[in-house]
Amino acid sequence: MLLSRDFVCEQAVELASDYLEGALSRRERRRFERHLAGCPHCTEYLGQMRETIRLTGRLLPEDLSPQMQAAFSELYRRWRAELPADKT
Amino acid sequence: MSTIALPRLSSRRTLAPVDADAPLLLARLRAGDEAAFVGLVATHHDAMLRLASTFVSSRAVAEEVVQDTWLAVVRGIERFEGRSSLRTWLLTILVNRARSAGTREARSVPIADAGPAVDRSRFDASGHWSSPPEHWVEDAENRLGAAALATLIRDALAELPARQRAVIALHDVDGLRAAEVCEILSLTPSNQRVLLHRGRSHLRQALESALGEND
Ligand SMILES: [Zn+2]
Image 1 (cartoon, rainbow over the protein chains, first blue to last red):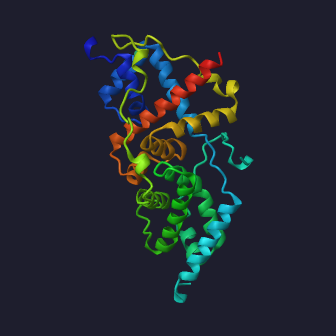
Image 2 (image 1 turned 90 degrees about the vertical axis):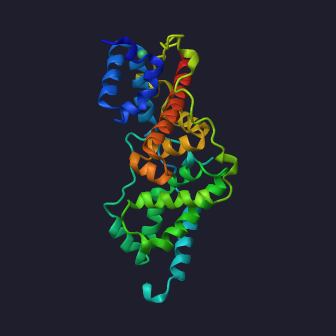
Image 3 (image 1 turned 135 degrees about the vertical axis):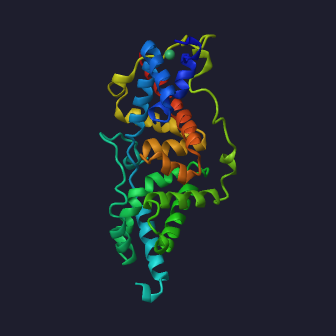
C-alpha cells in the first residue's frame, strides 16, 4: 500500500460530487472508498452531501399566480391571432 | 407574501411530466387548446423562473424573460423536432433569451466558482479534519421543520454565484440529467460537476451551520 497515493480528507471532500455522480475512474473510486473506510469524518461528510442533495430535490415549485396564468392565456390568444388562417 | 409563494418541501421529488406526452401535447397546442398551453406553462414555470433568475437581476425581468420565451416557443412550435426533450428545448430558448436580455452585466462577472468545498481552516496542516463535520443528518427535519428547512435551502441557493445556482436548480431541484444541464447551459461535463460540487458544498455548509446552532 502506497500511503502517499492515498487521499487525505481535504482532497477526499473535493471528490464527493464526482463520486456521487459516478464520474470517478475505477481507480479513483477505489482510493476514495478506501479513504472512507478508514475515515468516519469523511463518511459523515459524504452522508451530509447526500442529505443536502435529497433536501434540495424536495423543494416544491411555486404555484403559478392567477395573474401569471391570465398573462399566459393572453399570450397564447395573441399567438393564435397571429397565425395564418390555413394553419388553424 | 401570499401563502402560495411559501417554500415547502414535498414528500417526494416532483419531476415535470415530460416527453412521453410531447407529441399529443404539441398537437393540442397547434389545435388551439388554451388549457393545454397554460398547463404546460404551469408545469415548467417554476424551473424557468428559477433559471432565468440566475441571468438577470430582478424577479420582474426574470418573469419577462419567461414570457418572452413562451412567445418564442409558441411561435417556433412547428420547428420543434423532438431531437432534444421538450423541456431541454424550452430551457435552451430561455437561456438564450436571458443572456440577451441585456440585464446580465450585474451578474455576469464570474464570482469565485473555484475555491475549496470545505473551508481550509477546518483541516490541519496535513489535510486531515481538525474541525470535523458536526452530525445532523438524521434529525434535520425534526429539529428545524420542513418549512424552515425549505426556506433555509432557498436562501442558501440565492447566495450562490449564478452558474452554480443554475446548475443546482436544474440538476438537484428540477432533476434534469447532467447531459441536459450541459446542453442547456453550454457546459462541459467536468465543468458542470465542479459547479454542482461548489453549489452543494455551500448548501451543505448552510445546513451544518443552522443545525449546529440549534444544539
Ligand atoms: Zn477523511
